[in-house]
Image (cartoon, rainbow, N blue to C red; front, side):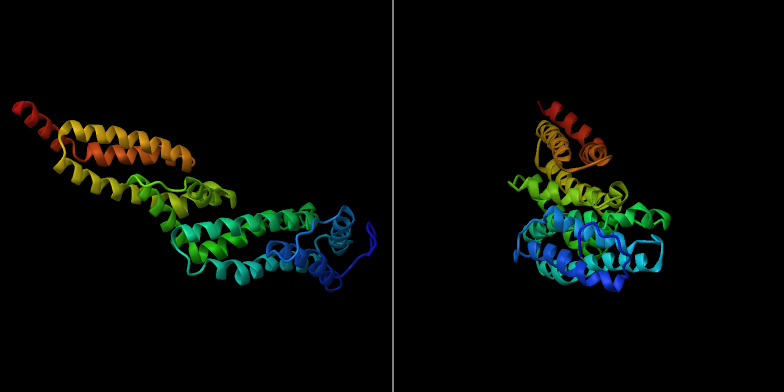
Amino acid sequence: MAAGAVRPLTFEEAWPFLQEEAINRIIDGLDGVEKRQFTSEEYMRIYTTVYNVCQPNPFGPEVQKLYDQYKKTFEDYISSKVLPALRGKQNEQLLQELLRRWKNHKTMTYWMSRFFHYLDRYYTVRRNLPSVVETANLAFYHLVYGEMNDQVRDAVLSLINREREGEEIDKGIVREAINIYVGIGEGSRKYYVDFEEAMMKATTAFYSRKALDWITNHTYQDYMLKVEECLNQEKGRVSDYLKFRSKYNVVEIVQHELLVVHVSKLEEKKRAQEAAA
């Protein structure tokens, strides 16, 4: 098919070419089979093929088939390649594989959205559908997080708690895993639903346990030093990892669990130590 040739095509005529010359090559690159950049001539042939399916009716049934198959391409790849690679992994291994697969997904989305960009000129806008980029990201979100969200969330929270216990962790893994919630689209809402609530509960449980231990086994002065240290660490931690109002919620939770909940005991402990001095 000559670059720039404008000839209306049916979906059935166009898709074998798009599958072979665009999609299979992208997937081969992700899987390490072939890493060869598309030339400008190849790009134009693929883009023109998509354009020709959208002509002369950019809202017609052939375009709907094209959009549906575009979406299905991501769903099929995620179901056949991404999810099997994630299943059975835990903790850092799970997060490392997730980050690798998310990076691949962004590469695939970059090329696919360029080739199928004409769908956003008329079809997705007029039909009030997600853009081609949003469609790709929603496929990843619904399929990957629909199945793996609990495991991913628990792996991130486990690493954060290990860091709170003084262990050295790979902060980059935590930061990048959390950033997926934002990068996937509609970041603030999905982030809150899928991660923030669990993060707040985990923080409450962690510092509730610590407060009971410290108030029993440490002096008032040592306890207050630990509170100051924890607050400083959490302020740095949330700046490293978290987004939006989480930065304020986490610190408020630490203050509440370490100070507000035990204010009476702390005052009693302080008076007892002053009287004994």
